[in-house]
Image (cartoon, rainbow, N blue to C red):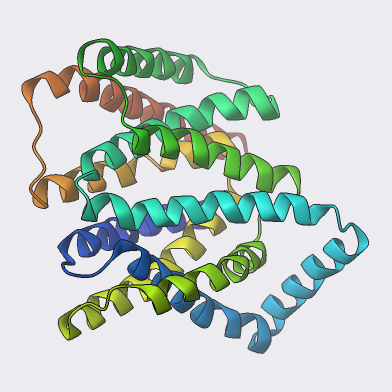
Length: 289
């Protein structure tokens, strides 16, 4: 569990760095940046499954399961498509003025994950989790009624990622080996984006390459945490990322208004309650052992 917690926190920091770097890029298409991120991620992670014995065994076992049950490829295709859209959005949003909408999606994601954990996997909700979900509903309600509704990037994130993780868990595709195959499936489209993209200035080479490297490491840590933690606890620890993304969005020049406090304040309070509830549960578990 401790390794899962550390992996989740490190991934959140790396994702925020990628978000900020993406928002600083000019004169280069977001699809081309996305394409380079996918290709570089594959080039970085694939050698581990060819050279590292433990990783190779993991990949062989996964391929063996798929060979024995070809129907699992359907889940793999769904998961690959879902994560591909999320990775594309993460490049598109900061480059097109949707950084705040994206951060709100990630604020809501941990709370939606708690609900999905209860509905899909019968994970029990504590009193604190129930209060947190109720507060989140208040924040979302204000955004819908008084602030023009939830932007499409917000909905795509907070509803799309839970479906992705649920599909992976249903097929037991929760390892990093499965993520590597998902990236492999996305590579042909990524190469197409690179070949047909608008060429950016030479100064963009280093930021684009750094996005690819950091993205590979971040997703490995993120999905590793997902496989080591319960869905509810994994959702709980994801509260760090939206805070960092919000800071990055403001740093990129997007504005928060007074009315936004009525959306963010209940959601932030909900995340604080989730954090306190999670730490209390972890302490109880340690005492029990």
